[in-house]
Image (spheres, helix red, strand yellow):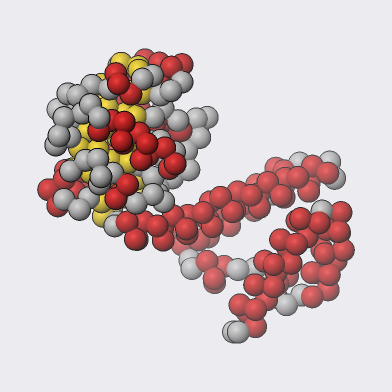
Length: 260
């Protein structure tokens, strides 16, 4: 059985560690600088909690770095100081290249679950795309096999492709969530419940599961309804930042549909 050391107990590490354990993988250690986080996850999956990198076991078969992008190289360097040669190390970032690990380990790669994770929600791992890459073909096949134990959606995505994928993910997740936040704040100012918008959000997300997003575009900019747009802009004078964003997005949609 593959012995895993999980480095990081944030949102990604928390859910990935639980899923690996659920599928019978031996997650033997959980590292976090926050010992409470390490202990919380370790107790759930039968692992040893540690809060010092020097305590990471040299006996694991796979080391998964589920840490922030700016910490990957530093953690890799520190691990390389005491791990034996030939150990396999991967990171879970969508944006950082695999080559960050190259100066420190011969066997390295990517194990990137493409999803937004929050501690409060249980993700459906069966449908989460797991993006795998390694410059070593044998290791890549091993990682693909591991990924298939936790998800039904497994893909070989190289560094360049993954960087593009991450850009697209920011648009559809981070930016869209910020727009939800704006809608929530506007309604809050007028003492209206955000629940009024939730069916609309769900229907919008559902439609793009079945049809191209461009074909599903609606709204005043799509229709060229300039009178409604002007009414919206007049209202948004009380929210200058939101007004500026509304103008940018409206202009882009107008130009898109004027092109035909």
